[in-house]
Length: 396
Image 1 (cartoon, rainbow, N blue to C red):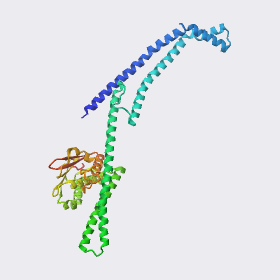
Image 2: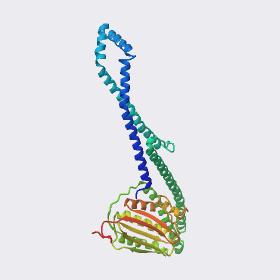
Image 3: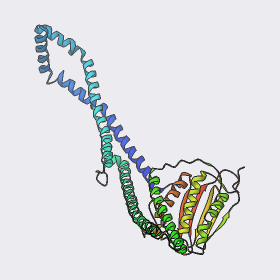
Image 4: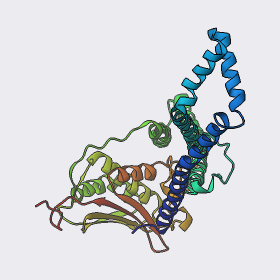
């Protein structure tokens, strides 16, 4: 469906261009009568009018001074050049006048281009006043430049917010690293200072140290995620991917993490459901969604995974029960460096890149990823283009 604003913008553009064309055409047609009137007036004034005698005397004096001619010879030369060839000089003067007026017309046209160019330069250096003002016949460009300015301003604010979130996250992660690192050093110091420590106590301290080391490794990986997100360039290598098989494998991989919290995965994926995709990148999408679901779902609940082909799309839904996501955060969670938990020491919170990377990968595949949340459950839905074939997902 065509956006009504786009239709209105196109209509305004066409109307302004028509006005501009009419204005230029009128000025161009005006050149001919103006050229004729100015030329006739000039010739009548110089050859047959008030300036005839002064011009003739000037020519005679010049011919006598430079050519050494007598007065009679100079007068004959004057008649041969000017009086007997009045038509030629009139035509030459008309041509000169026409091109002079045409040049002035072009200057008017190039003034529009120069004005637009100046406004674009000002827009680039963010010095253009708001709103941008151009001549009435360029109103369509005026509106477009204002929209460009608004879009640039919004992108700049978004980039600043993203950079601020990243900086805050780096500070939080740097602070969080101190806690497990201090614990690791402390427990290792105890083990070193007490070589005769009872076996049970030594095993306890070793287990705690290992847990803190794993947490430290996770925080360091989050730092690497931040760097990789800014440097990576995702390139897809597509091939047929069996989603029922991939999602079953991922559910098995998440089993230990789910079981530790009394959770389990329920799969309802059509057998043989296939898409043309990059398997590694797509697995990362599902992995990031499942990690997010595990982190924020209630204990002793199921993570439901559904997949089916619906027309020319493959639709995958990931459901979990837990604290609902506020409506104003449903789109924000897909922004980089955004975490649902604001507590900087949260054990569940990552670098805020998982869902941002997931959206980037899904978008490159020509699909979409959305979130919906209420008191009952939270759902992440991924849609991907279905391969050509029969409705059951098998190629013909």
